[in-house]
Image (cartoon, rainbow, N blue to C red):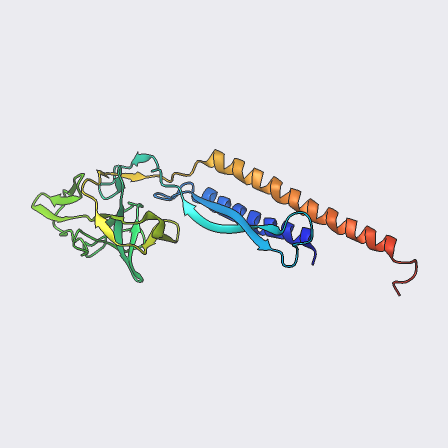
Length: 248
C-alpha cells in the first residue's frame, strides 16, 4: 500500500470539507440568524500489526473530519421598522412548526399569514409558550411585542411567543441555513430579551471567511503538489529499476 499517498489523500478530503464549510459561511453572510460553521479535525491512528521488531513509529496518523459545530456568539441586531421582525438579544431560540415537526431558529423574519397566523418567511407558524400557533385578529392593527415575548394589540394580550434553550447545545442538528433540530430536551428562557422591529444578522465575518478560504485553498494546492511529486518519484524509481525495454 502507498502510505504517503493515502496520508495525503486523507488530508485532501478533510481540506475539501473545510473549503465547502467556509464557502457555505460566505454564502450565508447575509442570512439573518445564521451561525458560522466550523470543522473539527482529529487524527485517526492506524495501529500497524507485526511491527514490534521494526524501529520507529508503530502507528500511522490519518486526518479525520471529526465533527462540524457552529459558533455561538450572536450576530449584530439591525432595526428594520417591521413590527413583526423579532431579534433575540439573549440566549435561546424561537420555535416554528414545520411540516417535519417543531424546529428551533433565531431567524426572526416573521409576519402574519392571511388567516392571521404569525409565521416565518417560509410560512411556518411561530409557536407560543404552550407550543400553539399565535393568531393575530385581522381587525387588530397595533401589535406590540414586549421583551418577554408577550404579544398585545389595542384590544389586549393575545399570546406569548415561546423562546426555549436546549439542555445540551451540542445536540442541535442543523436543518437548512437557520433551523435546528434538538435531540435534547428544551426549557423556556425566562428573559429572552426580544427586540421588536429588528432582526439578528448572521455572525459570519466575511473578511475572516475569505481569508480562511484562501488559506484552505493554499493548503489544498500544497498537498496536491505533494501527491504529484510522490507520483513522479515512484515513476522515476520504477523507470530506474526496470531494465530498458522490459515494459513490453
